[in-house]
Length: 283
Ligand code: C2E
Ligand code: MG
Ligand code: MG
Ligand code: MG
Image (tube, rainbow, N blue to C red; front, top):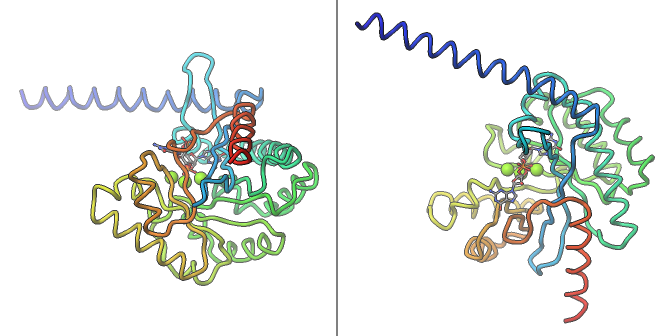
């Protein structure tokens, strides 16, 4: 009996694995099509300063599958990273985000920076900097309006290479932020040694800060550290007034989350930014 049960478990297991594997293979070829046919999209989420003004924007890639509907970047970005599809995908994201940012700057709707998420493969390519310079030239976006979001993993992968790239970026006037801060396993020495401008506290700490003393302590610690090191600090994933008030009381400088705005397509963003500008000029 036990033997039979064991065999059944094994079959269920392989079937499950087969299904997952074939799903990934399908997703991979569908992603290829989406990249080639321009079926990817960018949404933009505003970041808000302590005065309630727009501090900047973050570009987030979106994929609406013709039959499967919305597929989260949390699902397809790791696949794209594995297959190398992240390279053409990132190239498109960078160009589109810079183009849209330049349009917003020209319309007087963006004074801060457009933040673009970088993948490790993209960042560590030998031609990363020259590609970036080309995009800035072609889109006429001033480097002072661009920010790059890196993860701790990117800096760990090739720390020496990363230092050179970060210095070059800083020399160009492009700023950098550490995304999802606190979720990686890296040392804090890079905060001292690298020319980084901003830390984004991961939303897992932010969202539970009002419920858990441990998360509150982490938020407080990161904010104190950032302010001492002259880094700007952002709290990700603010969904409630309570979370906002609490992070404000800790001295956090910038806020991002559904409480203020969800990521939205460019046309909705333009409407949102225009209304926001009218509201502030009326008071
Ligand atoms: P991320 O860079 O940390 O982006 C923030 C994520 O938090 C976004 O998820 C955003 O929609 C979500 N978010 C913002 N405010 C709230 C909130 O109040 N509550 C909750 N629950 N979530 C909130 P999204 O768009 O699903 O992206 C997931 C991740 O995928 C990103 O995390 C980023 O790591 C990656 N990603 C997205 N776009 C790109 C891209 O163009 N290139 C690369 N390399 N990665 C990207
Ligand atoms: Mg990000
Ligand atoms: Mg983030
Ligand atoms: Mg995050």
